[in-house]
Image 1 (tube, rainbow, N blue to C red):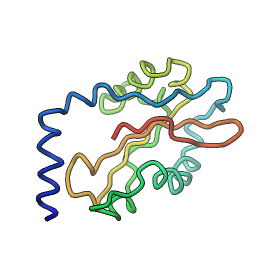
Image 2: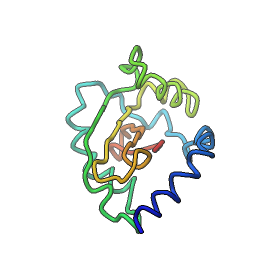
Image 3: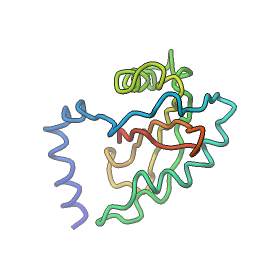
Image 4: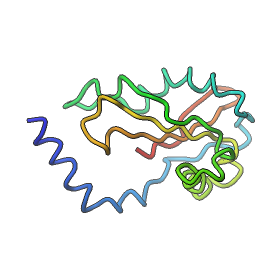
Length: 143
């Protein structure tokens, strides 16, 4: 049954993979509400992921524990991604979505979910920023 589910989920992604090009955040953060952060905040970012990842990814009915374990591949302020081809494109996405100023105050977090049954579910990318009032939040989930 799980194999059937994986096939049902994977085959459409092969044919409609380009649909992801239309991904957009529901709304962009408000620049004046964002706190300036730096690479020195990395430990704080890693810690807050314990709260943000369950909120952001939730549960899938067929695989309820798929997002209960994760490894952080990258947690980097977007300006620090320049020159890293695996990450720099996400910075470009963030700038396109919400503007250079928002992107420069945001972070890229790339995740690996070891309990995921396939490559599409096993990788995650989220864009974070820190609100002056409410703390860290996810403003976009790519995968």
